[in-house]
Length: 260
Image (cartoon, rainbow, N blue to C red):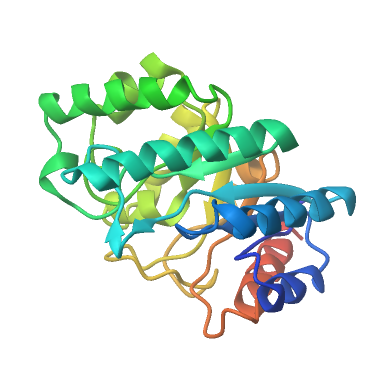
């Protein structure tokens, strides 16, 4: 059976919209201030409510701090401090509620995420530190360009495998890294299958980050169905309206039709 996984913030308008589709999985995308004071209490109450209602819950580490995309190898000290503080808090929340959190080692291309041995060593050392906060809590998500991506031919052997990293594998990110090559995408998913614990399911034309509804891009989904049937995942479609998950739900119906 294919599960329905939807993404949103924990703002009531978004959350209530997702719940009307009766999903199996909810991924809560967090912002930098969601982990502190009253907002943390609101977040934890939301997690408890969803779990009590029978939903599987995943969190997504904040993507930005002070308007800057986060990177595990930080150029600014305050970003470094936030990255580590936020991951410690998230590890605590996840361990309390027995849930997982998706985390990006990096987002945009930068000097600190470019593919070289020095950055590789720095990234591995930072990851080792974060793993001490909660070894089995974080699912590490691949980006499009740089060190922790399918663009890096040594990504698996030098980072993922030595650290036994559980992955949140973004299918569209990998597809773009492979410049739209469906054969390379399928080959890597087969290689990484035992390390992939979770998928982000989204279509793409394979040239840039476009967040397309399934069936409107160039990814060949039928060969990927056996992998999606055995793992949790959410649809991470760029919505016209964040309070309406219609494109995510239509993507789910697209896969259901393929399965038939």
